[in-house]
Length: 376
Image (cartoon, rainbow, N blue to C red; front, side, top):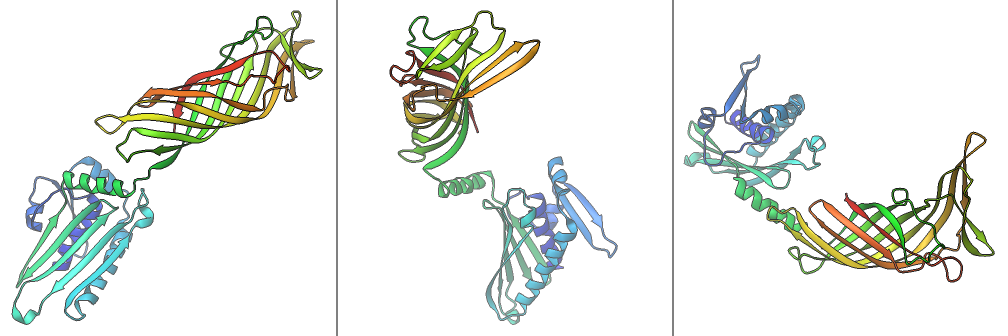
């Protein structure tokens, strides 16, 4: 009977997540205000489920009772073997349902059996520690005195669980972490000379950057100060407002307007890889979520490729011409960038201090990009 009650206690603790605390006996738990479901087996045995809410009942459907009872049968056999060994303290650990755990953490049962000489009439005790994951622990204590058997189930309260989670978080703390984010925005041209660079279509001159940032926290886990570095793969689109053809004439990039040309799209696109170095302050709110952040720094990089694309109508058909060339664009990229945000909303701005074109190989212009950063 003692082992049946023990199995019931372990089964309830692991499957339904017992939330009571204190030395309650099995009888006291069965008469509590929790909803109780009793399943009668053909052999006269009973399966008792104590449920605190409908969520526990729904979660119970995810467990395979056949496989769980097979594991518990193995566990009972091991306890029998332990009890038949020499007296003294014995430890045993049984792990089951690891592969079915959604978070990948094992549901672990640690059993400690303490027995004394039965001839003395002293109380025999068994203590069983059930660990679900790394932070949730349940203690099951079996005390047998003559014909009386008492089972106490002790579960840590919310404060103890929070303390365990905080300690686990402290152990897993890393000062530097990689994160992936995406910059989406628009480009514009500054410091241009009149009539040398045509106007841009704002919505068509898009900016996209795929970023693998390394955020290094300086001053400990409570410090708001970070250094952001890593890699940024940027794509700059410059779409022109008029019927513009970009060409390389005698190693000089020119923009020629063709008024009578039925053009739908004309753009110059180039890509680059950049390495940022940006100090940043990121504060936390009282609930632990991200609060206000602000950062500013510089970047340096190299242009990877470039091309122009024309889309126009000719003889009633849509034609597309794509030309790959460097178009005398500057190879080395450098400039300033900054971010500002609150919570999950972060805005960025980026200014290329290098000229868009090489010296005397194209008109004067600098690119500025701005938009929103999507955090992953």
